[in-house]
Amino acid sequence: MENNELDYSLIIAIVKRGNTDLVMEASRKAGSTGGTITVARGTGNPDLSKKYGIVIQPEKEMVFIAVSNNIKDKVMKAIYDEAGLTTKGTGIVFALPITDQIGLLPAKDPSLKEEQEEVEKLLNMPEEEKKAEEATPAVKTGTVDVHPIED
Image (cartoon, rainbow, N blue to C red; front, side, top):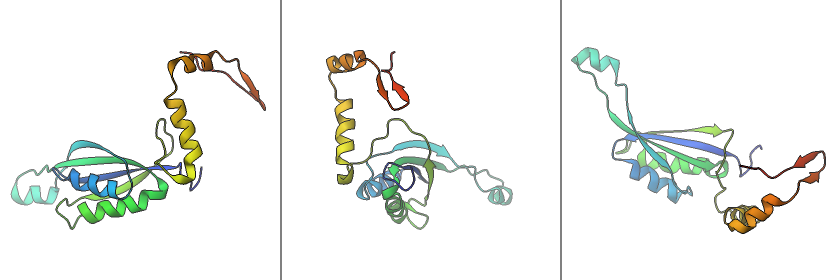
């Protein structure tokens, strides 16, 4: 899929410890739905280590946010404006393409209403219906036979 609202990127923000709220607030205002925060440690500046004889390993936090490409630039700009290098968070922001994924659902987007309803229907299907669907025989679709997945 190219330039499609179902294509995703992983936005990564690295900020000083204690500033992830800035990142998450900015990203949510720009349209993201959430993220994952991890603690990280910087490697320090070797020049400072040599000059002062100490090793600096600043505590950092990393925020990982998967977003559809149609809002990626908006989210990145919002994060950088709130937590970038010239702010209290002194952070950096970059994005990587997500080439394969399982489980990411598109954000609520009016242009994808039918697809979103179908996904939600499948996710919320009662167990009896799931079993009935699993018992359905394979359906011939063109040159591919589709069989229910068995555990």
